Amino acid sequence: MKVYFKLLLTLSIGISIISCGEKKETDAMEKPIEATEASNSGLSSEELGKELFEGKGICATCHKADIKTVGPSIKDIAKIYKEKVASIAEFINDKGEPLVDPSQYEIMKANFVITKAMSAEERKALEIYMMSFE
Image 1 (cartoon, rainbow, N blue to C red):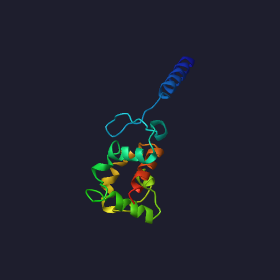
Image 2: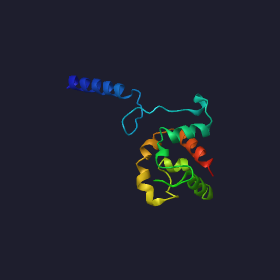
Image 3: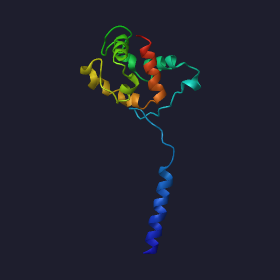
């Protein structure tokens, strides 16, 4: 009985040590997500937001500056979020209600995999960039 207990204890400790290794977040395609720190990259928050909007965030696929395409324009989004004193950063972290076009919410939810994997700083940078259109 003592032999089985020692074996079980040894296996438990081994599994614990192995499972404590560094874990990296991945995007929807299981590619590692590298955090982009505005302070480390030399970009302002607005510049970082623009970079994320047009790149990794894939926001520009559905949102344009002043015309509605698949999603509402950035100007319309900024105007409504300013009027309602709401946070775009909260919304893209799936912690806010859809304010601009609730009929498109299900389509937008698919992108939360990307935006929720961003750091809080990156989500805030996206918000700063988008609010600059108001």
